[in-house]
Structures are given as structure tokens and as C-alpha cells.
Length: 508
Image (cartoon, rainbow, N blue to C red; front, side):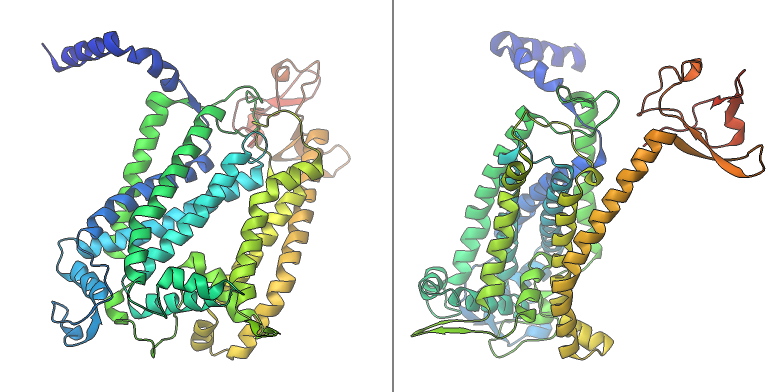
């Protein structure tokens, strides 16, 4: 009996007992859209799988302890240096564990790509209106996944107890203490004592490998279940409607494509881990409260808070025996307002637009919703200004720009650039809408220039709708209408009109 016959026989026996085909057939025939932008969610998923695998390997060798020791390991430049067991075990992973440094760097790169993929995925959902009814819950889950991914990244970033991560942890300690009334109690709950204490590393380790990954796994499972049963949105097209899905089936096309993406993500992360250095803790040294250095910035997804703290003036509020430090506003209030606004945006837009009708399965083009696109551009401009402000010391050092001038540029920019981004995006969307109306009214530009009888030159346009006497364009539609590009691609009809001789292109 051949292998094929043996597999077929075993599958038949399983189906006879459990009726597997009855449950699998509709799942295998499920249709997924083909647009590339839908792959960012899968990119986040496969990055998270790499995170789980590499993190499990690293956890076998990491010592989550703040106990002090004198290092005498393989990295000779650190000999006789006092450090925590956490930092010493990270050095051992980097230089003594087989493939330890490769796995460490793969893990760190995967964390950055995981958060970036979630962010880009959310941006695609926002700008195309994919958060509208009935997908509001999935939008909320996606935002919480972004928040948990940032928290998970910060916890892992702080575990090695090196000079850079220790500086970030000290900043976080100050942020917690800045919270009025609750700050002292929350600091004790997190650190167990005054900073740094001996409990913070074990607690971060437990949160990093158990609590936060568990929450992320639950949210991913709920998110995938929602996408599976509610189906994806899709871009408008010739066949796409609110009641169907146009794309490829789960098996074999989508399964092969998704498996290929998973292999590519793993391979590229392995390549990045082997070639591109990231977080070289052995060049930073162990954390010492009295030391810091230039370019002490966290990973990119936290630089916004760093930049906000650097731009905010030193205004503090004294209320009797209580003080509200200046850092409370940019580091606590601003992120809460920002993420809170992102969470409730679908409900605010639905109320303002009175969009309480049927479910929306067709994605919108950003140009067709200029106000929403303007708000998105404004938020991105706000974010990028704060990220640049978080590197003001590096700008000062590299470009010899006075530090105070960089700060004032950032303060002015954070007030001026976001509204400017809103206005420009809004006007660009309106201009694109006018261009669309011109296409509908006059036809598609072909790029072919023709001399008119009166002597002037005009571009040959092709109408979107077929004229009654143009048999070749009788069934032309907005999507898929042939567009000629060269003079040789045009034919002259009996009445002198121009039609496409062959299909040389299609409308985007």
C-alpha cells in the first residue's frame, strides 16, 4: 500500500468516527481578501509566535534576581565588576549559551516588529473604516493588544538590568510616584520598596513570561474568532458587495500564502538577529543609579512618552500638602487621553455621522472620508514630533544644535504641525474627490496626445460608461475597464470614435 493510499485510508476512518469532513469543509472553503494590507495582522501573529519560541528558550537560562555578585565569566572586559545576577545571566546567554546572542537579538527584533505590525494594522483599519459596525469589539481588542504589546516590550526591555534599561526603569518609578494620592501606594505595589529594591526584576519576569503573554494570547484568540465569523472587510470592486467576500479560499491558496509568510517572517527575523546588532547590553554595563549616558532612549514605541516629558515645561501644582509634579501630565494624562480617544473613536464617529444602519463590509477609501483621514494624519504628526523630541540630546550632539533650541522647535512643532497635517490631508482628500468626479464626467486619461482639427493638442480620454454605438465598450465598468496607453492601442470606429484595440491596462 502506497503512502497516499495509507493517508487516505486513515483519513476515511477518522471521518467515519468523528465526521471531521462535515466540520472542516466549510472552514476550508472560507474566502479571504487578497489585498496586501491584510497581511499586517498575520505579520503580527507570526512575530508573536517567534517571540514565544525565542522567549521560552531564553527563559531556560535567565536568572531573574537582583542579588549582587562579582562577574568572572567569559566576557573579560567585565571581570571583577559588581552586577546583578540578572545582568550576569544575560552576559552568559550572549557569550556562553549556544546561539544565545542570536536568539536574544531575534527576540528583541520580533518584539519591535510585533508592535509595529499591530500599529500599522490598526492604521489600515482606521483609515478604511473597518472598525464600523459590526466590528467595534475587534477594534477595542486591537487597541488593547497594542497597549499590552507596549507593556510586554517594556517589561522585557527592563529585565537585563543594564545601564540603559535601569535608567528607563528609574524613569518609570518617577512616573508612578507622580500620580497624586495613589502614587506612593502604586510604587510600593510594583517595586515592593524604594527604588530599585530586590523584587522588581522577579515581578517583571513573572509578568513578562506569564501574565502579559497569557492576556495577549486570549485577546488574539478572541480577535481571530471575531474575524473568522464576521469575515474581513474588503475594498470596493467589480464583484465585491456588502453581502459577499471576494478573494481566495482557505485551502490551498490562502494556506500556502500564509505558511509562506510565516516562514519568511521567521527567516528574516533570524537574518536580522544574526546581522543587525540590537540592545548590546555588554557595551552598556550593569545599572548604577549614579550613571547615565547620551542616547538613553527606550525602544521606538515608548519614545513618544520620552519626548512628551522632555517638551513639557517644569510646571508643578502645589495643593496644600500635596504636589502634582510636572511629569504627571505628559507621562500619565497624555497617554490616557490618547489611547482613550482611540478606543472610543468608533462610537463617537457613529454618533456624529448618525451611522446606525446595516453592517459595513466594504472598506472606505481614505479620500472619501476626509475628516477621519485628517484626524489620523494629525495623530501621526503629533506622534512623530514627540519621537523626534525624545532624541533631542542626540540631535544636539550630532548636529551641534543648541539643546534649548531643539526643545523650543519641538514645543512649537507639537502645537503647529498636527493641525497643519489635518488641514493638508483634508484638502488633499477633497482634491482627490474632485479628480474622481472629473474621471467620471470626462473619462480616464490614456496618456495619448492627439492634435485637434483647430490645431491645439488634447489628451485622448476613454469614457467609463459605454456609448450605445460602441459595441466593444458596451459592458465596460468602472473596475476593469481597458485603458490604452499607446497610439497603436487605439482603433478608429466607423463614426470616427476611439476605442481600445486590446487590453493594455486596467483601472486601479
